[in-house]
Image (cartoon, rainbow, N blue to C red; front, side):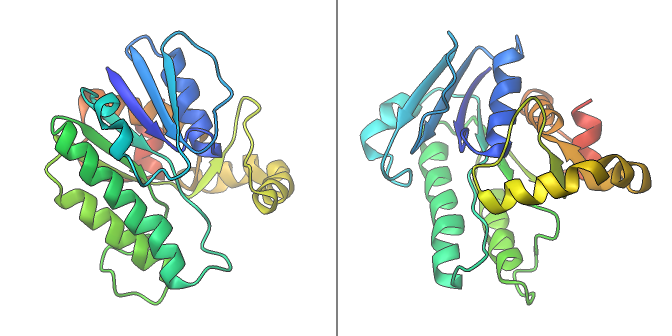
Length: 221
């Protein structure tokens, strides 16, 4: 399987990339982003762009991939609805429209989050826009599209968030994660399990197109 990734330098993306590089079923990985992943591997190539939303100059390099793992995302904290929509809905849907035109046989896997609003009419701004994004992706003529909605993601193998506030949050939460797992096992997953689950649904599919933490953990064992 050949995989193109967006957001491979972020916390979730680092974990997904790690699993792709370790998995013998993944033959090639192309990372598209603004910054390098810092990884070196025979099956990894990178495209660095100032504007990830403008793929016109690299379309020839995006053909022939079997799956896209889209891990690119930002926190809505402090953002206006218009700005959050631009970097969430507009960017994601724009990239997906290009990929489905170039590789309609592709499986598209998108990281959203627990609480995403599929109705698109709830009070939470981020949840509405994530829901709009999910719905737009599910309508596209990909071979298949899957929406991953994890709750708490535990970073493993030295992976950490580039966002300072998230690093502080994870540092505070870290001692309590075993307790949270024990009390609510379906609310916590890990970067490792997310990566493994993405690979599995791209290869084998899944019974539902929207997957929460329970389904992610089951697929990522």
